[in-house]
Length: 136
Image (cartoon, rainbow, N blue to C red; front, side, top):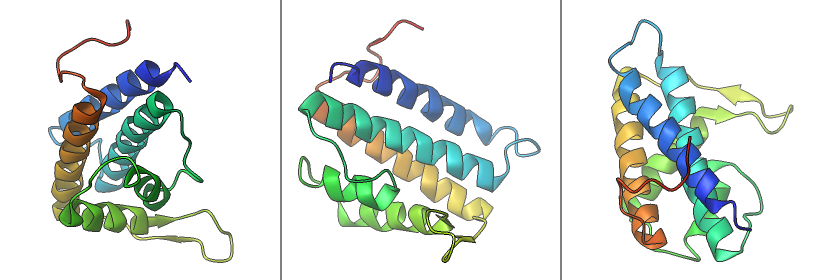
């Protein structure tokens, strides 16, 4: 499980795209931004799991959080926003398929949650935010 650096770099790429997307709301709708932010969060968590040699049971945000809290502390307010992000798209079951488009206000909360998740994971990985971990 040595590909954690690849996941970390992919998380950073999705993170940069999500943060830059707010400058182009005509192209990046709240749904698109939410999905990009969710991909960044998944990649950050997967980097942590791979470095630690563990795998989550599933890849929904709630499942990732459930696995992550066994390795690090996630503040309750962050878990609440991540659960809200997870609730936007419930697409794993055809019987309970549901998509609720996020609002522009949701996007700002989701981006803040992304920033906080990245900060926590990078600290846990002992990686400086500007450190290059994988050549593009």
